Image (cartoon, rainbow, N blue to C red; front, side, top):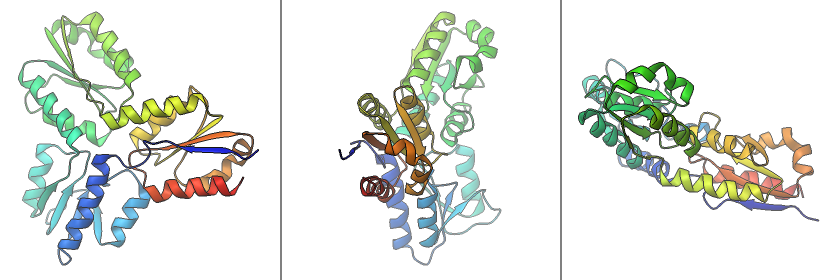
Length: 289
């Protein structure tokens, strides 16, 4: 019997990533003689970063003392301090922060201004979370980041003594992580305000992938190992069925036995995975039948 290979409907670039990639290319096309730089990787995908490099769009790991041309703020966002440094270096900043990420930043600022102890559910080292925290810290020093109850535990006494606690979430977080933290905070807070800021694209992608996994012998998650939403997707699916996380079609070789023994295979991909990489994976799977 031929294998059944299904592609998830919500696989690949989300709106925010698509907007960022297309806009950066447009900026370069409209300003061929200007230096175009992006502070940090525009998206977490090496294939895309290399493609931008070939077009003459540079990735900066830090802000130079003297810069010229345009410096793009990536979809993860940045702190107001970073925006200021970019201007001081001599760049013209262009803000491509994802609109959903902007909403989280605004919500965190609102809570901070209103006297809430702000809890950001997410990974402290993630650029999106660093920017959310920096924005909230403009208005309060009562801000913590946690991706688990264990990480919140050291702040238990401080949270208990604060009258109001507000929660925002990294846009690519797992709903189960948010739920467990909310349950914990409910038991120690006097007043709790929750803003579920997980973006709709992430939620739909995770829900659809879980449904596909229940009817699959194997799910292949395609995308960068550095991408938070892609790694979360793989983590969720591993609890349901055999799941592998690959960055491109070449990595399929390492799982040839598992692929051979699987009849129903579903493929999904993270929000920063380009369409051509997804197509290459599908083509390789179909050729091997």
